[in-house]
Length: 214
Image 1 (cartoon, rainbow, N blue to C red):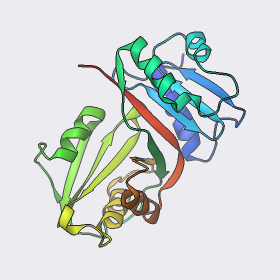
Image 2: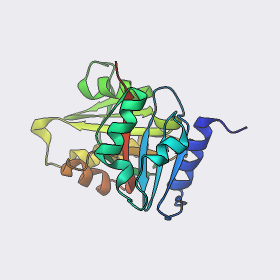
Image 3: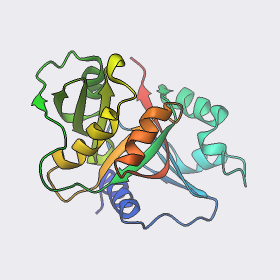
Image 4: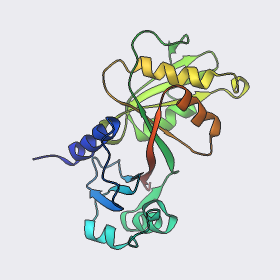
């Protein structure tokens, strides 16, 4: 029997390999892969909702034919109210493959888990590892359905000099295994979007995570 985590993990593995859900305007509802992880991913003309809620209730709250509805504020508010969760930002979901060899920037392991970027990552990922560069930080961790995720942070006084692209590229070298590497990037953060695109990440959809209310 396939577990909830396996269902979503298989879907994400297929997407990373270029095998997307059918662009049929449909909605796939999957159970949560873990207590922490719930959310909505919108691909081209198909959405995936992973939440512990009745699938008929979920689809019943979506107007037929509205491709934008799964990521719309009214639907997310309804979903959060029913499941005692709060919606995070809607991010661009990107994926790439690891690269061999050493990173293109000097890095040292970062043991300070109090760094704001690392502290935030601990709320959404397991097995978080972080490295500091001169002017920034890069991290890896296991997020939704166990997928390998990365995030970067560039110090304010070092922005606009290409370090973000170098850190995003470094993440591909740090991944160290032949497994897809994912990143969620706020679309309004144009500098970060450019950095990940320049580092070889490919946009595959949009995602919002629904965190449990404390």
